Image 1: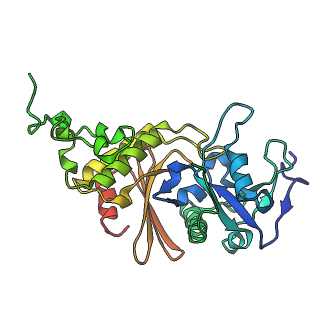
Image 2: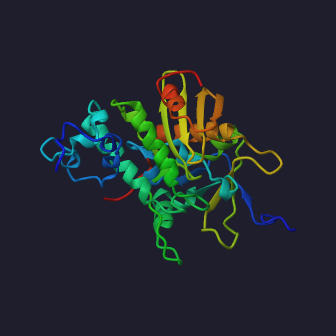
Image 3: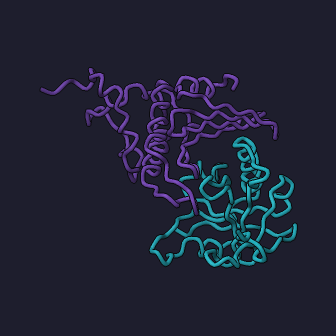
Length: 145
Length: 164
């Protein structure tokens, strides 16, 4: 079987910001919980983010728009992490937006691979590190209203 | 016959449905009062501050409303059984619920609480299955434990500072 990502991904430079949307169900007070940065098992432990060129507001607008199937996702706003930060925790983001079902500027961050799976605790530790950076930097675009 | 509010039945003592009300516009309105006769619904929470009641109340209500996909592709809505485990934890705290017990959902359908101490970050995950996940991260060195079967008192002990 062909690799789904073969010829379809683009590696990113270290000093690029990545945008992460955080719904209210992941917030404690005005800050995201680390669960906002911990991907799901059903999504193969891929964390979805957006590229810097989208802008923090653009990433929010893209995420919260009405989708063709009618669903609307909610977000309290955009928080930023960095490619270099991810790499420091052995997380390697890549642009996979050329895949047909993904949004322009979509970046996936795999927490482990099939060959080298991460433990639950290891994933949580990395999610806490991303959360900590994002919180220290502050919300870069807050939901209007 | 109506039982006096000060002598709740056993069912009322353990009924925490008060936590699941929609958040009211004003905190005072969200709270049961002696006048409304609802205080007996939550006698064991009486030393919890109004603000904490309001926050936890609203958050549990929110978690109930989430649908699959709420946290992006593949994410699962909090399982009713995970919310029930969290409710059991609230009951087991026994009347003094601090704000750090505010719950959040996670992408796998669990409910978590996460808090920091001076030297560590701690997580309890109510998985909704017959277990509990405890986690402690001390500057990148972590320890984790799955407690199976589910044991609410183990969660309470960890929350109160017992070792993992």
